[in-house]
Amino acid sequence: MLSGGMIRHKWKSAQGRLHQRSASKENRAEGVRLEIELASASWEELERAIEAAPREEIQIDWEESWTLFLKPASQGISENRLLVAHPEEGRWVATCVLSLDSWERLQQNLRNGEVEFHRLGGLHFLSNLEMVWKKD
Image 1 (cartoon, helix red, strand yellow):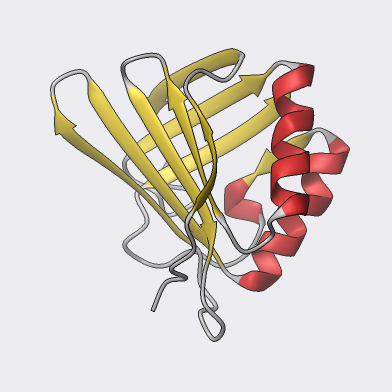
Image 2 (tube, rainbow, N blue to C red):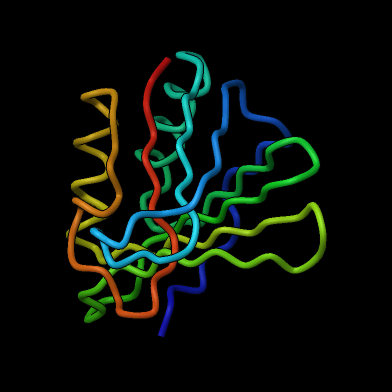
């Protein structure tokens, strides 16, 4: 069961660049690779949001095309779920549900200025999203 926290932080447009391409099969994600370069101010805001409400969901909207949901899983979930959906033309939705251990590693990696989500922990076999965040 996934955590049922409310959306604590919602950005209408984070400052940065988003690059989308086909994912490699190397990381078991055979769907979309998403590379996000966040401006320093947005990166720091994201760090603060995760530290201030460590069990809450975060939503990031990128212009008109992408929405990203990021949240920690409930206790007992050990694999990360990185899923992307394409509900309609021109719209993409990514959901990242991270185990509690991976959520802690996410916080550590944010402090270092780069997060490669496939390196945070094991991926659920249905995951179809490969994602990398970098501080610009």
